Length: 500
Image (cartoon, rainbow, N blue to C red; front, side):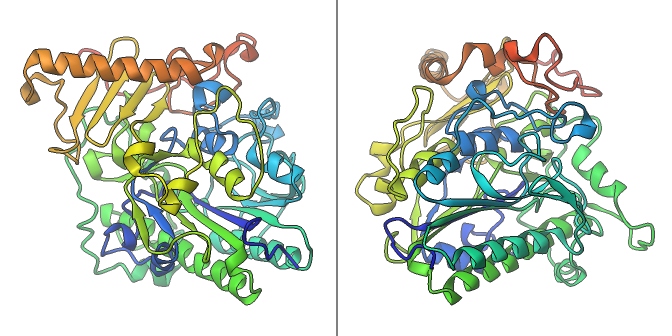
C-alpha cells in the first residue's frame, strides 16, 4: 500500500490557474460556493497572506517547482513558444534547475502530474515525473481537449477539469497498491478564461441570481490596456448558438462556476484518499499560481493586465491551504507573510527529505509557523514579488513598488488603505510629511534591492529582460543567443507621460 507513515506522507498538490485569494468561502466570500475548499481549510492551516512569486502563471509555477525567483530561473512571462514542436523548437525552460520533485524521487517518491505544465517541451516528461499527463500549451477551451500522455498527444472527451481529476484519481488508485509514497501535481486550468459557454450549464445557471458584490466593477484602470484580452479571448469562444447577450455578469458567472467545478473535484479527491484509508498519511496542499482581478481596481486579469504591470494584492495573493490530519493543526488561519518560494523547502521538510538549499533559494519551511512554534512576526517581516521591471517589497503595514528605470513607483499604507486605493507617491494622496515619506521609501527600496541582489542571477535579471506580458518565446540572457525572449508589447496606452 502507499505510504501510511504520517512522517513521510503521500503528497497531493492541487494548483488552480487565476484564482484570486478572495474567491473562496473560507476567505470571507459569501457568494461563491466552495464547500470542499472550506472543509479542507477547517482540517488544516489556511494562510491568508500567501503571495505568488510573480503575478503570471509560468514564472510563478517555475518558482514553486525550483524554489528560485524569476530573475534567477529565467522564466519571466507566460510561456507562449517552446511547449510543442509545432511552435518551433521545443524549449525545456527549467533544464538547468532542479525541482523539488527531483529530490522527492531521489528519496523514494513516485511522482506524477495531471494538468497544466506550461514550462516548456510538453512532450518530454521532466523533473522526475514518472507519470506525465499534461496540457500541450498554456491553456485552451474546456471541452474535448487534446492532452499529452507520456510523450504522445491523446484525444480526451469531456470537461477538462473532470478529465484532469479522473487521471489523478487513477494515479492515486494505482499507487495505493505499492509501498512507496507518492506525489501528485493536480494542475487545473480553471478558473482561467474562457468563461463563456465553457463550464457545466447547471453550475453557470446556479449563479443567475448572484449580485457579485464580491467583484466590484471599479472604473477602468488608467493603465488598462486598450483591449481587455482576458474578456476578448473569452468572448471569441462563445457558442454560435448563444442567445443570451454577453455582459460582465456572464463572465462572472463562468468564473465562479469554474471554481465551483474545481471544488466539486476537490471533494472527489478527498473522498478517494479517505476511501483508501490514507487521510492521516497524506498531505494535501491547495493553492493558486497567481491572483486575479474580476473588476477589482478596474482590471480584468492579473499582473500583465495593465501596462506598467501591476502588483496589487488582488494580483499577487493566492489561496493557500495545507492539511494533514494528525500532523498539521486544524482550523488555523495564519496571517504570516509567506510566498511561493517557501513551497519547496516546506514540502521537502515535511517529507523528511534532507537537502542543502542552493545559494539563490530565498525560501524557508513553513512548518514552524503551521505548528505554532514560531510567531508570524519572527518569521515574516518582508515578502517580495516581481514581474519584469516591476518589483515589490511588502510588510504587514506597507507596500512599496519600484519600476525600473523611471517608475511610476507606488507606496501604500496597508493599515489605513488595505484596498490599495491611494498611492502615497501621488502628490494628491500624500499623507506623510515629505522627509518621513522619503526616508520610508529609501529604507524599503534599499531592503528590496539587497534582497533581489542576493537572489537574482545578473544574466537573467528581469529589470533588463524586456518582459512584455504578451508571452515568453525564448530563453533569456546569454542563453537567448541574441534572439528576442518575449513577444513585443502592442496596443497599450501611453502612460510614460503620466506624472510620477
